[in-house]
Length: 78
Image 1 (cartoon, helix red, strand yellow):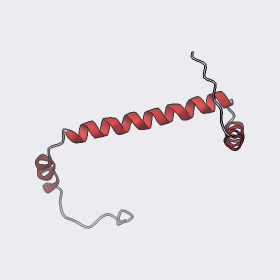
Image 2: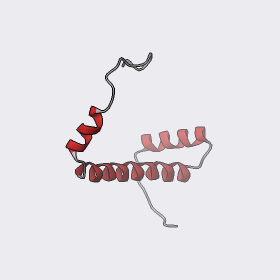
Image 3: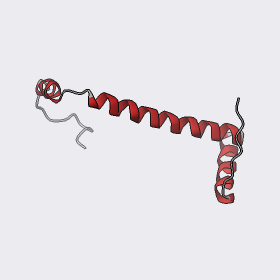
Image 4: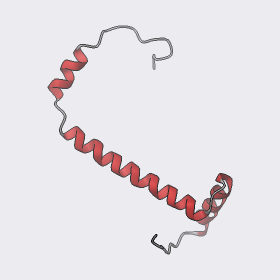
């Protein structure tokens, strides 16, 4: 496991300390989880962009044309 020395403004450190305590985890665990979530979000975005570049708009339009035209179910209007 790697070690990282990190300098944060006191206000952010205070928020981290407070939230970590509320969550019942250490500050290290909280920061590790937050960084992991950020990495996951970036990797997911990169994956979606790659997949979108391979998309065939004409195939998508043919698939969407098969969807019946009807009113949305109650609760799905928005």
